[in-house]
Length: 183
Image 1 (cartoon, rainbow, N blue to C red):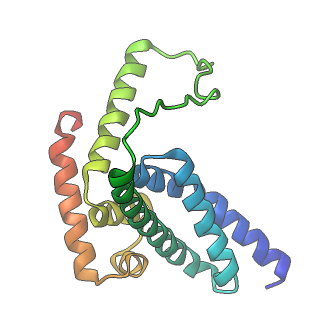
Image 2: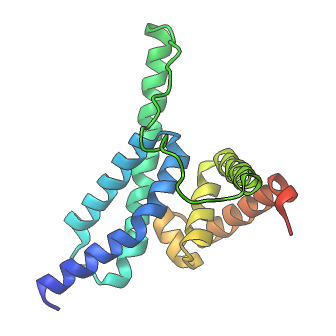
């Protein structure tokens, strides 16, 4: 395979996973900017270290890197917040609104549909945020990415039995929290 073809394949792979990876990181961090940084760092590390690997290996490798970056961010945040608690009084930070998000939706939709969609998305995001980290990782990789148990175990750096347990518990918890949306 030529270098140009490999580079093109890698770019297509990254373009295909970037949105899902961003959602995973945003739900894990609760911060859009931090999520963008984490995804960008994971993509950079994949290209830097594993571009020469077979393209079938990129998915599990990328999500393994992403999950490690998320865990690193959570550890740093935990330590940082622990020290802030001791040295600084907490301030009420006002969330800055993204001007792009404030633009009106140019698609014409029924208000009832918009409200129900927003409620469903909000409920889903809060249900996903409520999951423990390992359950959330297993759910994202198995349900959203469609990885099998072995690929998910590799990406999460754990055994296949752990993946099955985490995924089963995540699905059970989500079903309980989202039962009002069940068909």
